[in-house]
Picture 1 (cartoon, rainbow, N blue to C red):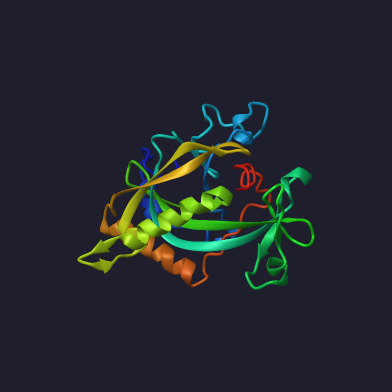
Picture 2 (cartoon, rainbow, N blue to C red; picture 1 turned 45 degrees about the vertical axis):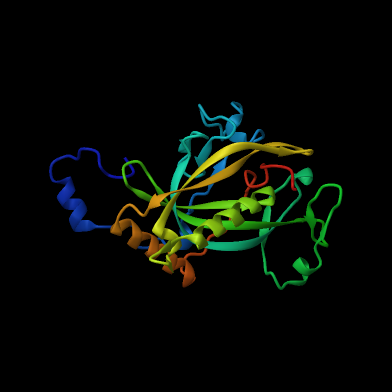
Length: 252
């Protein structure tokens, strides 16, 4: 098991303690994939039985981990400690042309300055015809039922940007003895609800304050992750074929 809590043969536990992370010395942060936490939408490939990405038992509105494929029900949701926030400007090939992630752009780049919104599709388009997607990335620690913590990213784009702003506002409002507290002082439960407009229907995030960080250990782990991101030691880009990131909802 991934958490290493299954019963071990005699002597193995002592060997684990002695040898530590032997064999993993060459793995850096650029060699790992931090999972994204996302909502299944109607066109998500994980819901199609004939698709290799199919996840049995998953349904529209459920929440899932893109690496482990763990699924949380829409109403149950997932408990997280928010650790760090970044706004990313991402370039995608338009979905109508096959879709696909191209790269990250600088806010001060000529490409971003020259982007125009298509009044028919609502997409923000670059001069080359690709789509500019403003993406709020919330780095979090997933708090599992057994108390274990897991790094993840909750990315919100298009209609979900208003949910990101709401979450940021909620975090800024938290105080202790009248003074601000770190974002990871509180836990939040992310669930999903049905949403839509005249362009279609989809499932959106619903964010609720749950409580205080469960332990000092959890607080320190979150603080350590925040430091790694702030120092630039943890550079995370979307997966090369980020189709799920485009199969969400109409632009606006």
